Length: 309
Image 1 (cartoon, rainbow, N blue to C red):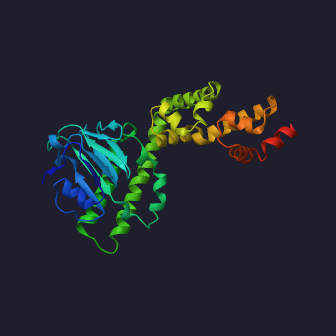
Image 2: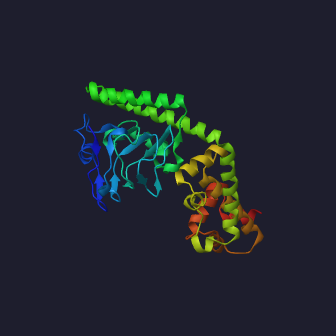
Image 3: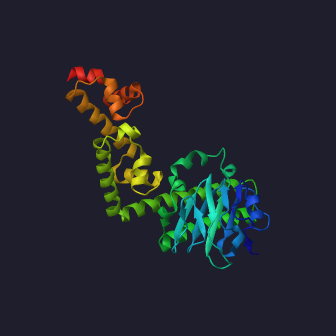
């Protein structure tokens, strides 16, 4: 059966269930209400669907071989072989071109949040930060890695299609967890193999952090944040954070806080400015937030630090 996306241009649709997804695509009723594996080669996107906005309330893991005519957030899908893309609930998709059956090879796994609700996996989802990566930060798989991913996908499909019983949810969730843990490992390998590029991003982050204060951007924008530096690097916040932590062992927030505290120490000892004035100069809206951070990092209040030195 061919899946044909039946939506109209400029239409806004919130896709909140697996059944709704199947109906929209003209597919038969799902064999499981909370999870579905779709064969990408059967997708058909007509011209009238171009420009529509699909607000998806599910997790999606996708392996495709080339461009599938779909915008994801601010970016476009553009696949080579063995490229794995993830998205979480709340993402927006928009068809950009017609797609005929057979134009794409691969699969898309959709998982409704209710499948994992109340399970141990629900509490682990924040660890899988790749669900918040941008498309161009996709996972590049080797042949062996792709085989392991497809084995997990095959186990999931077999379980929900052939033997739904009292053990099905546990088996499905176990395979989902295994799949995502493999992806954590594969992303770590990808960070390692791109270490020169990663080190360049870390170096640029350090320079831009210093420049932020030197150019007095705190007076206009307040304290620097991860979003600012990830935008400078043209990366998503989650990918940027994971890359910095992998290379340095510390999060971007740790680096920012350390720099702010060291800057504050210099200002406390090198000027006669009041603590509140230093706090505002550093970008804090409220001086007590500055005092709290300083004490957390040094064990002393700013006043105590100044008096002891």
